[in-house]
Amino acid sequence: MKAAVLPCGGGCRISSAVEFNGWIAERSAAELTEPFTFVVGTDGVLRLAPRRSEHLACAGGDMVLSAGEISFTREAGQWTVGEVSNQSTGYCPDLISWRAVARALDDAGLRRPSGFTHEVVFRRCPDCQKHNIVHDDDFVCVFCGSALPEAWNIDPGV
Image (cartoon, rainbow, N blue to C red; front, side, top):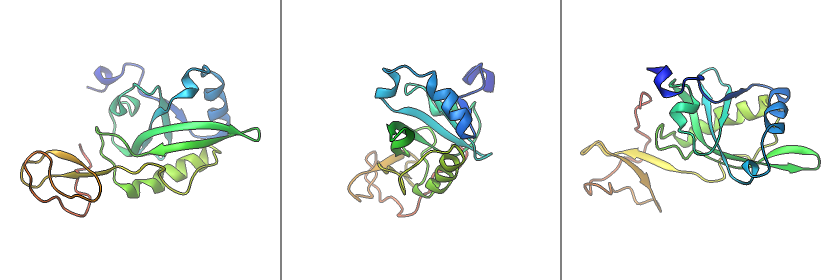
């Protein structure tokens, strides 16, 4: 099954500043103008792929600690995270997944914000089982109108 997701095995592993610097040096100016797809694997390692990549493909079909989109900027001769979100409708990561992202970015030697710069709140409807993105603290299912739980309830296997 994993080979069908992405034959090369997923996004590029970035476990150190040396690996990140090598990876970023290969990016074109056009690529750097938009965010990249990222996941943090269960091994705690950051993986990066082009923006239009699916998170599942970036993860090589594996489970993750977090997923979303990330952009990088160059400041004072050093790469830093410009923006980072947990926007992944495939994995629907909770906001507390930031801890795994922060550790992975620190390991990669990247300056980073103190949290997601764009937070997405995901909930599964207990009645119709559909995944929802909660907007403006309105915890109501957009599909069936049922109340959504306050606590994150997306199954980790999703």
